[in-house]
Image (cartoon, rainbow, N blue to C red; front, side, top):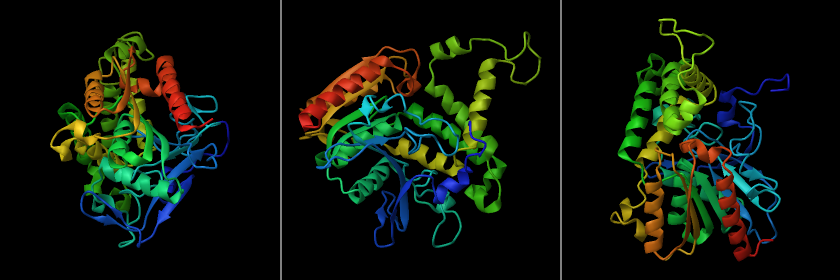
Length: 389
């Protein structure tokens, strides 16, 4: 950061975040899929742009696994630019000069929306594992409560990648009459067995850390930093492609010309992963990591419709554009094609773009001109149909 004032500690963002907050009292509980109503809860969010007179230009951005509401502004924790400033801002595909953009931290998160690190009003201590297990539908239900609070009846567009894309699909399924257009990117209608396996390895790394303390580390003054760092390292590998790793790192040594014959970080890729792990633990809560990964694991949009994804979207008037990347092996193009086929079977309006990229799953967060062009074309066409100037 250029400022001499350090950013707030991550802990300070949990209950009193540096963003807008919508608070819901005991008489406005959030009904969770786990069967436990969550009372006295809050959702933290950011907005950009101006809501027009007829409230028809609202765009909801849904963040991915470790994202947050700071999509297009400087993060109060890291001091870095928002995580999707390539996509959102004046003149960008999601143009904040034209649209009123909303991005909320998910339920179960750790940047101001109620989650396992939040204080349980019944005990005065952090919820920890007493917090009910979260689903993607719970996240969307909380967002819908926020949209209601903002007085917006129908969203012009819902946009998101990865876990954010799951939320986009859930919005279209749960509230079809409230979503004019939907842009799910690099995502799937259900989590694969392989992806569940990767998440389980990460969760076990966290829970194996002695400082996890059965989830009570905040109350006991510890942090399972080593376990969470390992979880992040493992997950980060899945976000990249072999081609991207080779191009960026190859087998190059880190600040040396020969091996040390030790277990130090001899290779650049090792040093990079260690940095990713260490920087992650400074901004993310370990229990939140358990909760949001589990939410993705449980996601299976067709499950309550007899396994038929087409039934989910039957009669939908929402316009869809589905985007995938050729080198994304975490959410491969076949996952996107399954969504497109289901939408076609449901006679829904859908476009599909597979983008040639060697950047892996994280391509949706990076500088991908073809993605920007596809998103801009879809959003502009939908805006014309919606009558938005």
